[in-house]
Length: 274
Image 1 (spheres, one colour):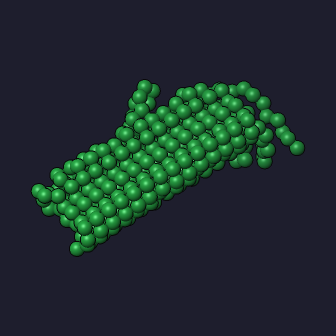
Image 2 (image 1 turned 30 degrees about the vertical axis):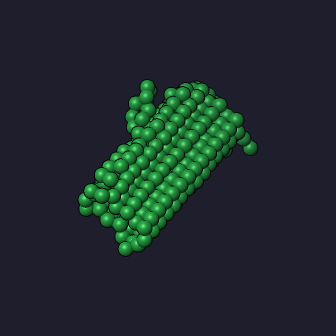
Image 3 (image 1 turned 180 degrees about the horizontal axis):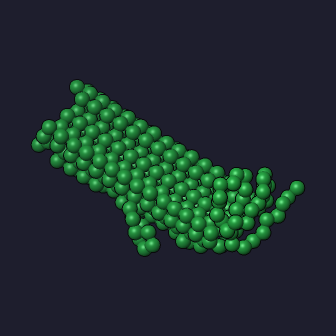
C-alpha cells in the first residue's frame, strides 16, 4: 500500500504498510514502517519500527528501537532499545534504552543510557558517563520545563524547572526551580527556588525556597528560604528568620518524642522575633 515507498533489495522480513515516501534500507531485517510520510529505517537497525509521523528516522545500528508519531524525530548511533513518542525535532544519540516522550527540541546523547525526557522544550541529557569523582553512567530524568540540562550525571533528575543544570552529580535533584545549578555533588537537592546553587563535594544537602542562595563544600546541610544566603559548613541548617510555635529545647539533637519543639546540637543561638 501507500505511494513511493521503498524496501531495499535483499532485506528480509521487513515491511512498509501505507504512507508516502517511506524507506527501509539495506541490512535492515525484521523491521516495519506503518503509515506516515518520509520516514526511514537504515544502517543495520534491525527489529525496529516507525509508526506514523513525518520525517522520522531510526538509523546507525539502533536495533529494536521505535518512533511513534511525531515530526523529525531521530534515533541514531547505536541507540538500541530506545523510543521517541510524539513531539518534534527530538533525538536519541548513542544512548541505549532511553526515551523521549512528547517533547520538542530535546536530546539524550552519548552514554546517557536508560534515561528519559518527558515533555518540555529544549531539554537535554548528555555525556552521563561521568569521570573522576563520579564514575557512573546514565539513568537520569528530565520531566517538563524549559532548557534544562543534565550533563555527566547519574540517577539525577530535573522536574518542571527552567534553565537549570546538573553537572557531574550523582543523585542530584532540581524541582520547580529557575536557574538552579548543581555541580560536583552527590545526592543534593534544589526545591522551589530561584538562581541558587549547590556545588563542590556538597553531598546530602538541600536548598528549599529562597533566591540566589549557595551551599559550598558542605555535607548534610540545608538552607531554608532567604535571599543571598551562603553556607560553607557541614551539618548545618541556615534559616534567615525563624518563627517558632512552641518551645526550644537544647537536647544534643536527640528527640524524646516531644512535639512542636526545635532541638539544637552543636553551637549557635536562636533569636526569637516578635
